[in-house]
Image 1 (cartoon, rainbow, N blue to C red):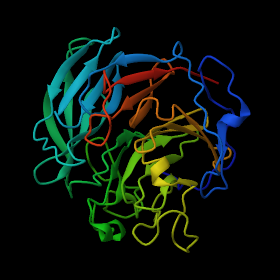
Image 2 (image 1 turned 90 degrees about the horizontal axis):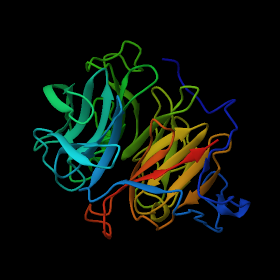
Image 3 (image 1 turned 45 degrees about the vertical axis):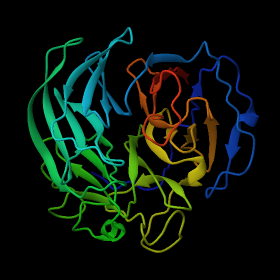
Image 4 (image 1 turned 90 degrees about the vertical axis):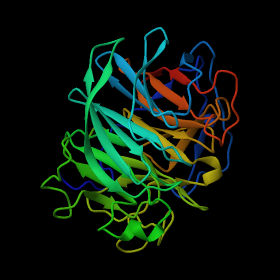
Length: 363
């Protein structure tokens, strides 16, 4: 896989959330590439434009689509849920060995070639398992299971947990440092990394470090993975006290943690393309539509948009409207699905929480 560098020529198209009225220019919050400048934050959402797909979920963490079905993972229960077109929720199965503690439990899921992949915290480790999907829409089940990768250090926090298949057909796994800061710089450790594997769990021959699953390193707690139309990989990352990050991921790249947090301008380290104060962000899942990155924020309780043609600027939507946002994904119909996380012990649950919220988008 070729090494990706800073964006060159990309789509300059702007994706607009369909919110029932024209969004004025003052709705955007512009920055200088290091931190958003102070300015108005506007949520122009129209209730008629935004709809609830499902509610009363228990700490939903990730969404994956397959053959007309939508699957959702629940962190604490270990359940995989299938969401019907009418919003009905049924249990597809329970992932074995899930041991929820702190930020750990059943985290990211992905579907590939008839199998559901799940990142989970057990009593001893984090690992990725895959299950054969049985049945069909409205009656999917989990069949035989096999472990894809094991031995990932687990902790009460910084477990990472997002998994996704890239346009190259490889499985990418976002792994936090599990509270062991120095492991992020140790290429012999799986912690604080983005890993790249074949769907069967083998190490691709073109990985940057021979015989290693490590694709990039120096990460604190990455939780969002998405690719643009050119095939470039972007990741969101929780900082500690100073900066949360949006990074353009290069094969073999060092993203600095724990030696740097945010922009460092140091030789050998790759700086983020944009960063925010943790109180305004705490970014988790991300999605990319036509050159715009959508970022779900937990502590910041907002959906942020970053145009990759000018990543020093951003816009914010739904600030405080739905509470903590764990994930944002592109649904098969082109809309965005948002997962709230107000029942995770850190939020303020409201009637109906947690929810899946549908937001239309248009070019």
